[in-house]
Length: 256
Image 1 (cartoon, rainbow, N blue to C red):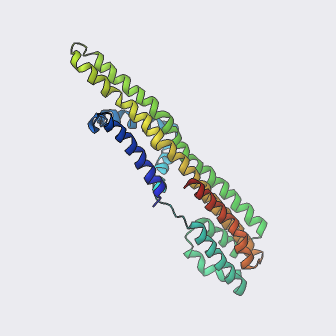
Image 2: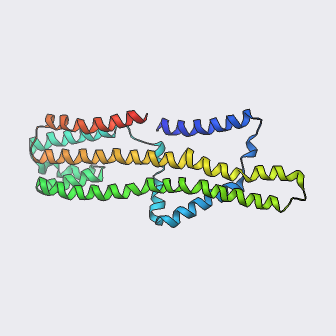
């Protein structure tokens, strides 16, 4: 569980609600299903118009990465590569063939499969770098979905507020209800601006950082496989790959 992400969103909501209560308000004032329907429905529709449905669904599935994240992924990958290097050094790289089906990381599995099949290091690097570029390009679309949602939701919140004001203006004969109606109308603006700045835009930033961490791990896996093919000493491979793991750890530490 990523306590930073979960704690951040809870702290933001708690701060806003505490301010509302301190000003004498109550929770019912900001719980408006109609405003929520306008803002979130309109935002979703605009995002679906901008991006293919497949990309939008992929972005929804990636939300779990905001709150669940393996902080030891780099360490686990390093230990796995060093183990493969020791085995290949003792018995030859062909001995890794039975281990391939048990490798969970698809990128590492494909790179080792090419290595076991006798692919030259330069050719293997070229093939896997093309795959890395494609994967990076695809993953860059996921944060873009949330960034777009963060751009659309405040404007749609204003639309919701204007719709509410139109309804209020049609009932000016009941002046006692005008003030309450105006207050309710502006709840849509709160939803739009709040969703953008508390969730959509921060989520885009966090997912972009997650994607960068995974890219570094793929680079680490590729360098490890190339080093195994070249017959590098396992201890030297470990030292070499520690640089990649350190980079991921530093980035994670800066975000904590």
